Length: 352
Picture 1 (spheres, rainbow, N blue to C red):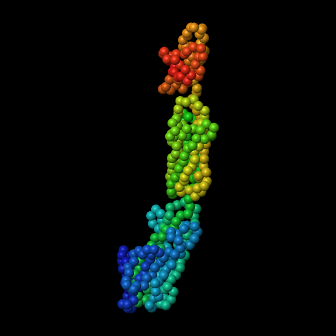
Picture 2 (picture 1 turned 90 degrees about the vertical axis):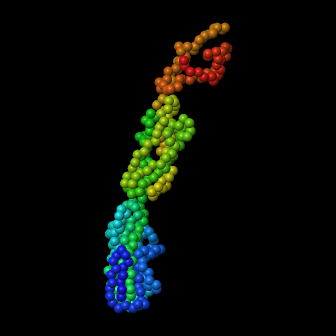
Picture 3 (picture 1 turned 30 degrees about the vertical axis):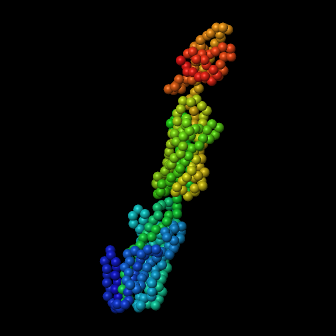
């Protein structure tokens, strides 16, 4: 009998009876692929295959592996051990934490069974984590047979995590109000569990309430943007974001806008996340001008001049543009002129 392992493991040779027409191949692989195998024409194969779901779901099930021999041994017996090992690297599954360690001796005999099923219990924890992997291998092979045996390399299998943060909630500024002059409104997105994956949420703004705020790209917008995306980085349970508020010079009613969540990623309860809406009131910080209008009496056939004593206005929130007056109703008996031009209903002029 010959026993041979492929590179990178050095070959071992066990001497015994040898029949040149009998060749046996020991192969460790998963369903759907062959790794580290050396094939010989007409060779028997010994393989371990994952016969349950691939990748293995974390949800408290067993991962079932089948160690099978393609044909019965011609003589003697073949003793092997099926063994699990923790994975390696940043996504390694930990033995007896993410799965139950299994070390199972198996013996194939001439004329006997050609397959064995082995269950590896998978732990269903409540941690949101990346998919993890562990190793299965065949070790401690003892062959008392005339067959030649080739052994494949250890194989890595994946446990698919089934946990993610369940709830995403959004809170707005204090009392859901923001002063127009504050420059921005703050919002905090919170998830109920730590996650190794970033949680992404998309949002949009719409005008709401009795006096809807103007949303871009409409002219005279009261907020800086109409929509966007926020990310809660891995390892965090909350993060605060801001939306710009436009501080205009218009004396106006307090205005409202609504923030709505339109899409989320890596959140289990999608419906709850998408139901999140916050109505925010922008408290106006502008005051209307103070107007002095003392009127002017002119005798019939005469003319008079309106000065700032008769008509003027003071703006407590001065801007770059002068105050603009609009004629509501022009005189019925006579004319109103400015710099030689007659003013009619709706005409406008600025304060000198």
